[in-house]
Image 1 (tube, rainbow, N blue to C red):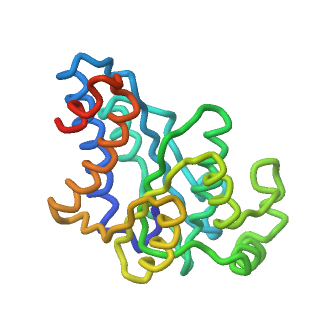
Image 2: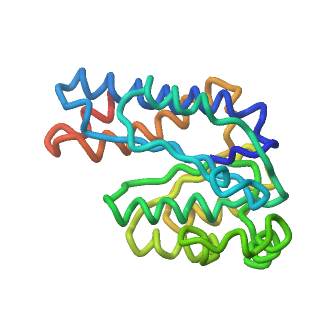
Length: 220
């Protein structure tokens, strides 16, 4: 999720929505006698190249407990922003996580398109300076299309939710590469919260449910 300054009025509600996803999924699993530890969610906040290395993206280890995840999310504040944002860093992190353990889906929430290849080079150079990024983690710059190609090869779908119309076209393009879902997200509306919760919950439940009862669990 984008955690730059332009998301100030949306970040709080987004945090609550992620917590709702965990709570609802846990409740349905419990009601269907499936272990609550059968799934995990990771929250990742991405920003831009005018944020320091420890702030350009932040994440909490994979979690099944809503209270633990919410406690971490409450430490995330908006910072930075520079036109198009570093969506590529969020996708890069997802690919790194998938190398450690298979992930099943990505939900992208933001109000701005990803940086172009030229913008990545320019912002790395004109922000902190290219030398600043020369460490094992960030030495190699990346581009969102390159990261998407890796996700496609690993059959990891990306669902994209835009909170500003200027992100609509590229978020739709990203989601369509995976036959994923792309929708406007009014996070201030109960309908928006329910839509996001339903999407994530359905996929989680399909992955963890026993095949014989999967549809019944999802229908719950």
